[in-house]
Image 1 (tube, rainbow, N blue to C red):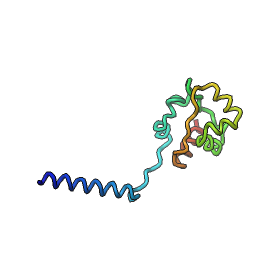
Image 2: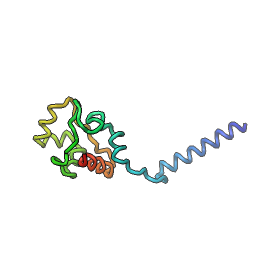
Image 3: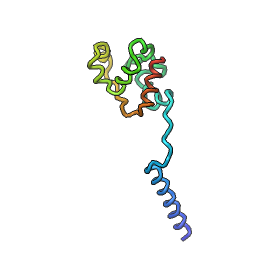
Length: 121
């Protein structure tokens, strides 16, 4: 009986904790760093560990010469749509077998962090 009581108590505590999190009582997660975003979002898989470019995607080094922060943010939200309107990117897309994925699901602060990272390469 004690075992059943202990298990039930643990379940009640667990449900209470889950309820608190789902109701927004917990502190919001801190935004991820540029290095964490680069890793978590798989950027290196296509662009290379040092953003040097691969057969899958171009280098990201030196992109500040082609992009403003705002234009890069627009691109990251809709890469295919943005590239369709940009002759340089439209031509570049022909060299790679897959399209750049969207990152519109990132929180604005994380999208800005990622854009700033790329512009600093």
